Image 1 (cartoon, helix red, strand yellow):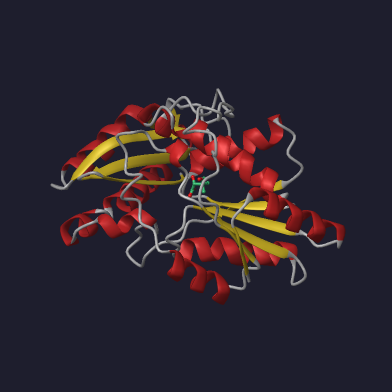
Image 2 (cartoon, protein in one colour):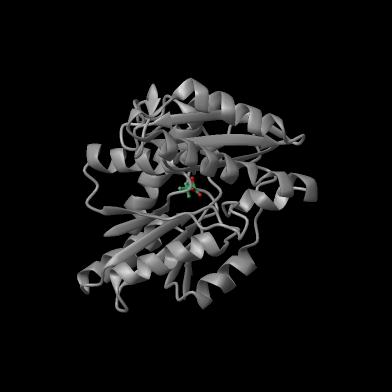
Length: 287
Ligand code: PAF
């Protein structure tokens, strides 16, 4: 396994791999890896084959954090991450120290902005977030030159936004969206779970319970569906019943266009964000 620090060095390595006929699979991460990330690595390996090159990027991207957010306290543990990558059969870790060399000197001034799918949900709660995500992901694609890139379904809106960027900007790669990994009680794995105290951790299952109960209600309603206001009120009450939880949003929408629906029927997508203190958790699923 190699650890590469500079974009140019990764481009050289990726170009050589491509010339040798090897397929490249990229798994973009911000590190502090868990079983969810490793399942993306295994998916990348499955797709590119034993001869392929699996690249994991580990970079806590500053441009996707607002000044008020948790960039400084975002968990980092490169030694542990690299041990996990080695064990998982990763070929290359791309771990740049800085991808915006000119930012401090005012020479970084290029951003990628998706203008439709970023309007609601995470985009509404975190207005500068997706500009940072699309910019860094475009940079990572240009560095790793992947044939496939694997993203987790846990960040559903992010996956949809990146998919749109790939289509709109003609990136020659296929995006793979891999399923969310969960704890046995349903909590989606996230690097931010480590910030939860025991009470918050116990109550955090409300994200999963909300989803399951909404699914059951929609199934029970059958073809006519359920008015979205009814489901939102139900979820708000469920979250309010947890003393440590504060609902940020709960939305029901078309899984591709992300356009909100009025009536929730089978196949509609659901996403929610809940604060536990200053830790914000997200989850999503299909009705
Ligand atoms: O999902 C993440 O961890 C990040 O948003 C990503 C895609 C690695 C970009 O920094």
